[in-house]
Image (cartoon, rainbow, N blue to C red; front, side, top):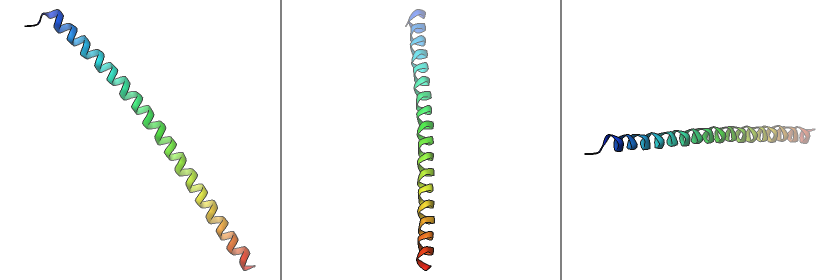
Length: 66
């Protein structure tokens, strides 16, 4: 059977591991948010580009008619 000191040391070890895991999870959450923002920006830019191309295509067709 383990002594109370050994058990307490094991508890402290597990608590440290838990704190490290929480910090890692927080870093992962921040990275996910960064990537989500980057993804949103990329989608917005792609949509702006497509709208500009569509407007340009409409203008070109209108110019060709005149």
